[in-house]
Structure formats: C-alpha cells, structure tokens
Amino acid sequence: MLKCQKCDRQATFHITDLIDGKPKELHLCEDCAQNFLTPSEEDTSDVMPAMAGLLAQHLAVGETADQLARLDQMRCPVCSITFLEFRKQGRLGCPHDYEFFSDELEPLLMNIHDQTHHIGKVPKRCPKGADQQTQLIRLRREMKEAIASENYERASQIRDEVKAIEVQLKTAEDGE
Amino acid sequence: MELNELTNASGEWLRGAGPESDIVISSRIRLARNLADFPFLSRATEADRSAIEQILQEAIASLMKNEKLDPNTLYLKVGEIDQLDRTFLVERQLISRELADATGARSVVIDPQEKYSVMVNEEDHVRLQVMQSGLNLQAAWEQVNRLDDLIEEHVVYAFSDRLGYLTACPTNVGTGIRVSVMLHLPALVITRQIEKVFKSLQKISLAVRGLYGEGSQAMGDFYQISNQITLGLTEEELIAKVADIVPVLIDYERQARDFLIRESHETLHDRVSRAFGILRTAQTISSEETMHLLSSVRMGLNLGLIGDLQIPTINKLFVHTQPAHLQKLTGNDLDSAARNIERASYLRKHLDGSKPNGPTQN
Image (cartoon, rainbow over all chains, first blue to last red; front, side):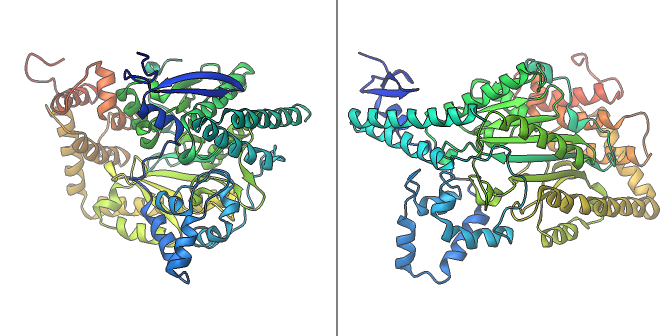
C-alpha cells in the first residue's frame, strides 16, 4: 500500500501537479487531497464583526431580497470567490475583486474611510502588466481544477500559457 | 542569528529611551502589502502559500547578500518552530497571535536589533513593521518606507492607481498603513478618566487597543492608539493624525499624575510602595497581578517615589514575566502553578528584593 505523503493513511489519490512547469507526482489520502485541491479556508471565527455589520447595514438599504441573493451569487472570474463568501469572511479573495465588486465596495469604502481615492505612496515598479498578473492568478487556479478533474490535456495547455506570461513578465523586468 | 539569541535581549521597543519615554513606550508603523500575481490568503492554496513564502525568502536572502539588510537577519518558518517559540514571538510583539495560530506556510523576518519584523502570509502576503522606542514616528516611517522600497525591488505589489495598495481586508486598502503609539496611562486609569479619553479618540477615528493588539485587554495600563482610516490621505497625513494627538494624551496623563501627587500623595506613595513590596517578596504570582503591580512601580519610578531602579529594567520585566518568556529564560516547560512560583522568583532576583525564604529557592 502506498502511504499518503502528508499523513500515514493509505494514499487513494494520485495527483500529477505541475510545479514550475514540471510534473510532480503526489500520493495523498482523501482528506489531504481535499485540502490540497481546495483553497485553505482562513479561520472565520474571528471575522471582524464591525465590518460584517457595516456590510449588512449598507446592503440592507435599497436592496430587495432578490437583488441581495443575486449579488451574493456573483463570482469573481479570477479567484472564484462569491460576494456571499466575502460578506461572511470580511476578506477579499484577490486584487481583482476590487474591480469586479467595485460597485458594491465603493459605498463600503466610503463608509470606512470617508474617501475612495488613494493619494499616498506609489510603488516605483507599478505593475504595468497588472492584467497579466491577474491572468496568472486565474490560470493557476484553472490549472489546478483541470488537474483535479483529470483533464491533463487542458492542464498542460494552461501550463504553457502560464509559462508564456511568466516569461513575458520576466523579460519586461530585466529590460527595465 | 538564532531564535534563542533573542531570549535574553529585550528589543528596541522595550529600550525605555527616546522622546517622552516615561509615558510613550514605543512607536510602531506597519504596512500591508500583497503580491500582484497571487490570490489573497483566503483563496490561496497551500502551493500558493509556499510559492509566496519562497519569493519573499529569496528577496530577503538577496537583500542580505547585497548588504542592504543586516547579514544576521533571522528568517523563520513559523510552522516549523514549536508552540513555545511562537508564543514567545507574540509576547515579544515580533509576530501577531494570528500568524502564530495560523496553519500552512508562513514566516517571519526579524532584524537582529528587533527594530523591524516582516510577517509573510499573515492576513496579507506581506506585513512590514518597524518599532522605535519612545515617541518617534518620523524615524519609524523613514525606516519602514525604506524597507518597503527594498523589498519592492524584488517583487511586484498589487496596486491600483485609484485604490492604492490592494489588501485582503478593505479596511486596510490604500496606504495599507497602521500607525500606532503605545502609551502607559496608569494615572488616567486611577483617576477614572480613561473612558472619556477613549470616547473622544473614537470621535476622531482613532482606535484604542491593549498591549497585545486586536481585542486584547489593556494589561498593565498599556494602550495602543492607532489610525483606522488608510485611504484618501497620504502616509504623512495619517502619521500626523496620530502624532498630533499623542502630546495631548501625554499632557492629560501628566496632569493626572500631578493631581495624584498633589491631592493624595500618601495614598499614591503607599500604592507604589506596596506594589514594589509585593513584587520583591511574593513567592507565587500570576502574570496578570505582575503586570498590574509593575504598572504602579513604573509610574512611581517616573515620579521619583522609588529609586534604585531603571525604566528599561521594568520594561523588560513586563515582557520577561510573560508565560513563554519565563519558560524560555528558565529552560523549563512549566504548568501555570509552577510558572507563578518561577515568576515570583524571577521578580525577586531582578528587583533585588529580600532574600527568598526556604532552602529550595535560588
């Protein structure tokens, strides 16, 4: 019997992960495979109650139950977080959420900060290719999902796309 | 540098020096940052977390190699050290309780002088914090800003022109800055004015916390004042918001101390002397009581009611008598009852109290 690489139980999942474009064999038990394939959920027990309250308050105004339910189902195409999940955790899933949920976040930001525009420090290396960085987040997630559903052909296609973007970013960086 | 080398030291924030250090313990500024090409931690897989950790570890290694950071900088994988060491780092304010208790790949970078630490994979991918003894926010800002620039040479941060630095929680977006000053306000507590002070601080959107951050009780009359807003103002303006209010609080505390000296000198002197007496002679003492009594002694020392002691010694005792510190200092794994005995012994030794009773004491 092949043992799980993360604990001592029997490995029932045999996963081929692509790390830096190279396939890596992983042998895991069901529980560990589950953990490996799904994003690690942060402990939500200490979610900032203030923010949850603030969100609930802002959403209650002018939103019917239907609208709210529809809003809760909205899912970021990059990190796949739903608005409901954000409301529950008080934490966003990726930088792109600020754009994807911008209509919903704007009144919230106004409520917290009394402002909606940044005027402070700007990084010297502003991410010119922010779109590319965002794509990387999405593609890595899709690659993981393709592997999980054993769609290796799709996974290897995505891997090539990831690699191409990484090379582009690296070249841009070296050229600076 | 090794983690254990930190045990006997006491770190920048306890140095007890710097402007207004009788009342202001330390000034601290932290910046929240995220890498542009990874999801925030709530959606990060273990593979993402490891990749983020590796990117930061390489960035720090490279900065050390180029002598931009001290070659003795400590890089620790928090998941690989034991529970006692994690609690030790929390007590020392080098990591948050959240980072200590989390699971998965996460790290901390520690400056050998403990002037800064960098947490990796806490609520955000990167959290930089700089500590300064006394009231010195300007120096803290210069240092954390430089550290931020150095790390940024090696990574691309998630940033939008409109919203600034993008953070996992919308309460930190924009500058990602938290400016905090830790104050020792025993006289405002004794004269029951502290609540009033807090209410007025909340009105100008400043937050008040206890010694160990989020939700912690104000032990030993220590209070952290910090900004709540992070967006729509520059870092300098946000620093000024906190910096402008601190002299007012210092003044209130001084007035309260003057009032106590003037109106109830004997009562105050008695309170301080009794506190000192208990700390020098107790045979078993809890951490809570220790903090409470040390607070009185610290104030008494600043008011010249007791002599023969140094503020840095007292500052150090506040932290060295915490559970994990005590166990690391004595090299023993102790349960709560044994810790109380060991803590009393440690206090007697360092406050040069009367020689302990009984043959088993050292």
